[in-house]
Image 1 (cartoon, one colour):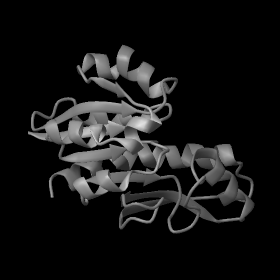
Image 2 (cartoon, rainbow, N blue to C red; image 1 turned 180 degrees about the vertical axis):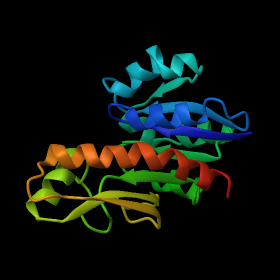
Image 3 (cartoon, rainbow, N blue to C red; image 1 turned 30 degrees about the horizontal axis):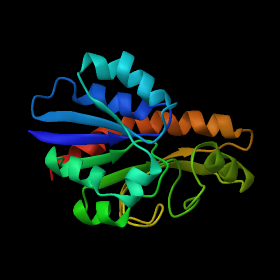
Image 4 (cartoon, rainbow, N blue to C red; image 1 turned 90 degrees about the vertical axis):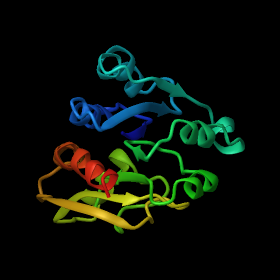
Length: 193
């Protein structure tokens, strides 16, 4: 049995798609949904929706627990987590956690890295920057996580056109389609390596 921990800070649409993708897979278990944001949509989705149906426990933690203790790392190790999947998780992963799970933490970024990455480049900020730069394409990048924002080795990219008339919201919709289409499959591919 391969075990996944999902980390999310936002609405949780990618976490839900990943959980649904593996719902009937008897060799993969979504063991945990972890969040630093008690108001995140993923918490409600998990507690009332997909997480409840699939019996996925939710873990909430604060900044001090995440950065100043080893509690999260120890919990993940004790649960024999094989892969940590960041699905809209906004905090930089602590070095101790990255070192404890080398090439076992992946993230999805809503642009074609190395463009439009780094601290503060998430969600609508990315899409606004793409439109402001008059880019003709955007997309997703799935990458391994290291101690720096968006600098880990790229695993997969998919692109979509950006039209001159597109707003940041238009780009966001196109990118989300790519996220939901590709992220669960790439998670599976990485998990089975």
